[in-house]
Length: 626
Image 1 (cartoon, rainbow, N blue to C red):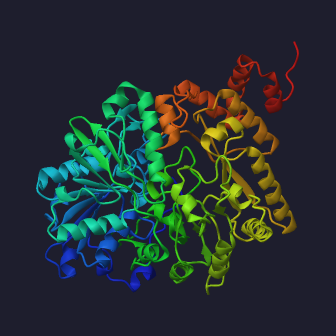
Image 2: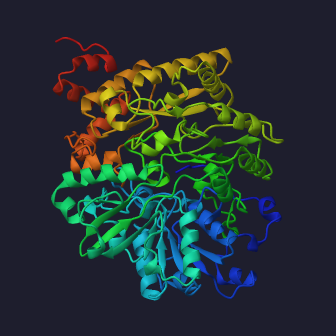
Image 3: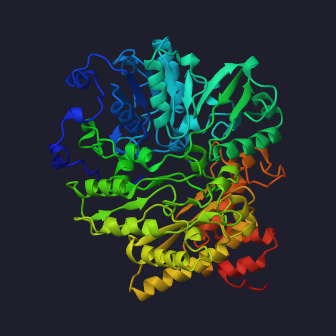
């Protein structure tokens, strides 16, 4: 956790606002709005921050803008007499569950399955304010208390567990989360369209059990409704029980799931038998257009934590309070990442006008010192990009537009992004805008053959380094081994060398002393101990003492997790080595810290065992001959 001292919200930030400017979190606040009941109650695993980066706030504001009365209960106490769950009574339409902007188990546990001592989405970073698997816990409580009220589950946790999935923290394959929770319907991915449609249908008198065809939802259905075989309308996966018996079937399932999640038209419906019922996952919505995504970001957010938290610091908010998100979606398709499974690979970009409106809002904040902390997105430099020929995109099922090489149909022109940077920096009160999100340097440096585009992209790289780095630029090569990088769906490390040379040249020519901070992962599927030793040697040659490193953590709905659990690559069904034991993982991780004398003897012994005295020499110098 960030150890900076608490920085409570200043009175000036709240001076022009009233308690009624937030969604109500208590009956008193509801009554102050002149309401005696609500249409929807959202239970959130996070503190309530009224900002477009926090999903519960976005969903609440979306419903509010459509005329619905919405209340939010942040971090309800599930251990006491359940008064937090009772206080608003039964809403007119439904209960919504938003377990948190971060998966609860990643939030609670390290890669070594140790309990974390903090929670960035809780006031003062306090741990223990949400249960493991809030979707399951909250829905079971609500079903007991209000058996006749519809329950809608959404958010990252539910979205990535919509079908059978490996749970690293329990080390077992679990069924789709609808089989284990008491929600009536699951909204996966970005939920604005879906939750509005659910509200409208319920408001029109439709029963929740009758909503079976809504895009971007998952539902439980009687087993006899499931088609026997895949056809032009749906894909029938191997059953959960079949996957339990044969992990290879789980790997084969995932290829279909990922491809349909990345289909331009939303793909086909997916069915999976689970026990005596079947889970049906309806296709995704197509990517939002400018007007649609603008509408979500232009809602009347206060951009502040609820007044109940005044005097307390919410670390996740501190990170993004002066940032602006430009787009959703990512076409990188990294094997260890869940973004495309949740947001899709097709980029939904905001209009420049919407972005500038938010930049002006940030610049007007009383505590703003002139610096936008991040003009970015899931990947910083994919704004306004996509395929030139949409007919080609419509037929494409590639999970990545960048791997194994950049798609020739992809328009990689960075000119629209540069224009956003320039316009943001011209807003009165803005001294400089920084890019804090991860930059895909392989995208920016890709030679297209178009002289104008290539010249623009070179200018982008130079302007990024010279004008938009806050001292440290973070990039994610992830590994140095081409074999491992191929499984990761990342470019060759040779390209990182090219980018580092450019970074160093720009720094030199501008008299800057900025740092390039690379991210790396150990124990990723396909990575062996020798690969980590070579990573250590190569990064030593580059004069890096690595700090942004992590051990691979399997999370639901990624290619890498399916390999970790099943031992097979979903696209080839060939076996892939993966470090699974704590001893294997530690043996790989310690190469990150080869310069720490604590690990020197162990690393030396390991490299002797691996018959790699050359790497001992590279890391520690020539060994003495006896």
